Image (cartoon, rainbow, N blue to C red; front, side):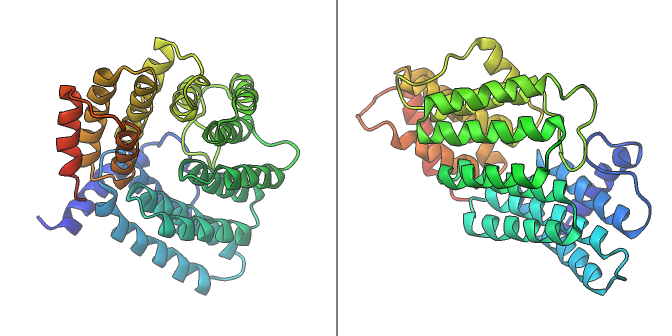
Length: 324
């Protein structure tokens, strides 16, 4: 079976539960915009376990279709199609990020922000700016991430939903951790924890993809612990780690495993660190995730002295075979 046929089959499978009442972000709406948004949501469901390189071409084709329809649409429905295009562009950026193509990721996130502004939906604009901020926080430009968080908060207005406040605070925490600013990280994390209690149960309000809950807070703690330097690392409990790693998203779980490995390496637990990292890298290779592999390479560069640990040798063997 050809790759396009495989993707079509996967999409059909993903659409079946979606039509039955999907969790999360899709808004029940009739007509062209609703059908296009449902396709984007269904591709997102495939993302957790499908290599981004297998999805990217098809998703870009979907995005081009949305953009073409938006340009030729009547004035009355053009804003809604711009909103759909913004979501598709944001997902295209996410796939580029996973493929470690940072230039394309920035370009597509920029397109998502531009389309959101064309839609006139300020909350969607805040979401897309926040998504770009999350990318910048992880991509090594935390000062730009903090600037974007401020911009997203301004776009969200005076009474944003609790999920927006918690999510943006978590991105701010990661950016401060990347800068090594422990006090600012702790303030942002406390704000995240405080607001998460107001998010409530059930699906997240559109345009958020997932509910912001204790698992997201735990993932933030683990990610920040992986970024703060030795002597400034926050205390993590086994509950934090277990909760964070309970994610059903294979790629996100592998990235969090690398954060845990980084924490173990800072504590000089080399054997344990690279045992965990090898597990994450194996997943990254299975999913052909450039983002996971690049993060694994960064972890390996932190180990500068010669080490004979078996886990390091096994990790190096995996890493040397990583041609994606």
